[in-house]
Image 1 (tube, rainbow, N blue to C red):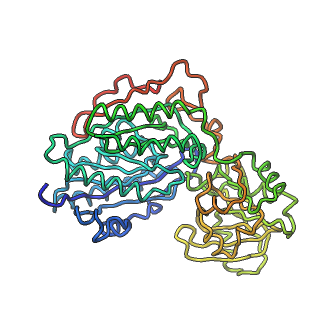
Image 2: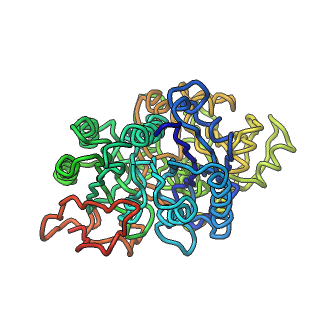
Image 3: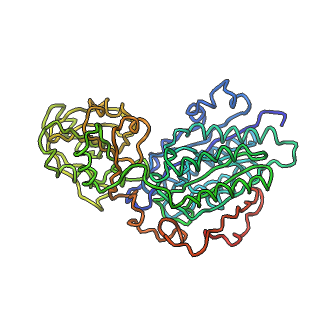
Length: 513
């Protein structure tokens, strides 16, 4: 290629639970368009290696906070704009490649395998010859159709996802390498070996901090380093949606059939060999049991994950089960040295009352269960307003209400609490607080490093960690851990997926067994 390749950027990302009554609206994606996309990613800024070797053209990307199913009309509007913007880019300058910036676990009302469908629509604009490189979350899903329509595909190798930007950069770098270095080889598109695996586990059992995921994912760079291999990836899959595509997948891409199939087989075989060894990243119990353990412990701060309503996994964020249980505890009814932080519960009407009353005032407010009231109703609290903060990009307005020794964070809109600054900005001191309860699964790095001890409360909600309680009925079976008995070992033979500009054809005995 004599000139710099022209590469467009497009994609929508939202991790969505089909078990949550919440719905995700278009505005939640906070769309970025044109140069705004380049601005978002530092590795594409002027004078960076990737910026120097390609002409990047932003169409539209949108990354929504995880939540419930995306409203169909809103998805269609965003999809149309992506296609219109791509059409304008192609009309002015034909493109060579597309970076497909997605998560991989988006669900839309009345649709299936949404990322594959969106890419099919994109292909109708950019054509079959454009090379597509996708970057994904390891909690995404790679259907046979998505594997077909992409040419290069990669995902995170860490959970928590400390390598998110590194992964996106790798997807772009791989695309550049193929576009610029494979022009005269007669093999422009890499081979793709795809292995579906009958495992569907929550992320809280597959953290790469712990075994067996730590060793499993450490094998990925080893496979990637094999001669004639371009990329290797393991998707755990997304456990809180109910589609046939929801299961683990291994993919290896490269230039030699033997290399990619051998690499994929090694990864898939190891994954299956250790499938019974996965466990929660921390001790678990009911919400009440976790509180009992925290009170009995001398380790401070003691963190508790209110995991069933984790908004960064797809929970609505407004399930009141945990907060109701907490406020019933006699140990916290009065202001004592047993301080507790609870983060958080949305309550727009409560926020209105609080902002009008002001810090230091005692108010009675009701919050929560406006979206998800399946497990508990709204909670009414009388307490002193400890602090108010304005301007958060997710919550918009936050406030802390002290009820006895419980400091409850209320928000206008739902917000995850992952950083120490989230608390300090509200005049809270988590490091010297006895118990810190957060709506999260595994602790994000800052909280993990802060916690002297930690338990995961197996609470109800749209991302319930007890998967059997949710009622999956459309996933392929048998599936671990839904099924404990496999009458024969699963077929882990790598499937070579046709090139994107070739017909996919019918599945050849596709099965997870």
